[in-house]
Length: 577
Image (cartoon, rainbow, N blue to C red; front, top):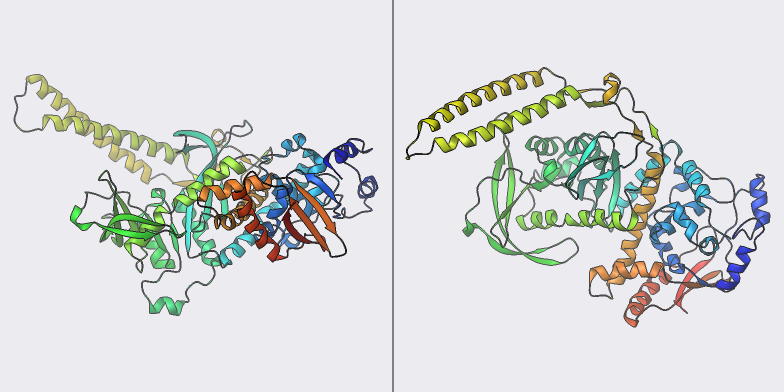
């Protein structure tokens, strides 16, 4: 059937546009049909037919795994499988919210599912709410993260960790302000802490409306979860035999810099940390640097100018910690300092791992632009538990006042330095000004001591139930967002897998992702062969022979997988028309 013939049939459907299977829909509405059957018919020119090329990768990355155990079973015309496929197809086709479906022909997308049409936006939102009830989306994500960490293609001993702020522009809750480095503004939002593997692929995300900071998140939630989920960690006997061997390595930016935290991670858990040095001190002598060829995680080779030393970090209030410090010399002469408790590593490896952290930044950028990870998935708010610990607003105000007074003190001391310069004639006005500055500095020092005493006597944290009403706010409903985020993570990983195969025939990394996106929008013909139990997906030709050659290489890999369409016994076979 051609696209024109399908369009005419869909428009004439008695139960609405595209509802060409009225008997099954009537039975489902009466509770006499558990789910609609997945049935493919011979059709030509199906829009977005190239999305079917992503099915094996979606399956391999967990879209259909553990759903019967971790997600509710949907009753009615659309099954759990159908809804997950609709959401995955939407994400890959860059349809960023259910309302966008109103601008797509419902029957065309339905043919990709083996149905007459896809659900309308209201029905889809209702089904997503049912799937995400009681936090089931988060449970499913935790199950998948364990599988991703155990995958042979994942270097689970090396993890990137960073926070990403999801901005909130609504009015249902006055969420706390977060600083957005990309906007250089403080805006209302939620902090999401992402854990990615060494290639930048997402492993799991932890949303936090009340942000305790990266160090506390690492200490209380992320590291304990990695300790329990990362496979093939060294046994206690192996760790005892090699005093420099870590269980795994975590890599993060300056926000996580803390000598006390580094010491705690190594001594209590044997977890190594790599980050930037927050207080590197004076520059090193240039004769210490040498050019080194560094192999990045994806195999690229770059030339860096590096030097390495052993360094003690910490303060006089706690025992110092010995770390490995590596510095990279830039063309401008700036020295970037890296500290590491990966004692069994080398300077070039530390530098390569930390600078490759941009794979995670690129992931954030790509997900915001193409998958819209900051979009709300549902509207509504809920209350926090009264026993939840939050920062005491009185303590926060005292810390703000202390920071303000300390800044004033630094300014006054800088001005005083002008009067302390040797030589030169001083007028009486200069003497009077210096005396006034000395008096002001004394007052500021006194204020600082008083504020420090007050901070010491004030509880840092308090329970949410004890907060003044003026300080309270609501949290956004989290369940559906976690389910949708999990599907988008699966789609990103699937797209990455396809682009890696395409990259084998292309010269530039960016080309493979662009070609994957083009493939997802390519029309295709469907030819089911029930005798051979095969579903032939015949792609329309692409814009140039070079891209077609790369996609031909991908189709050979997909055909070798002999993937069976979920819910049927039809083996997918791919080719060009």
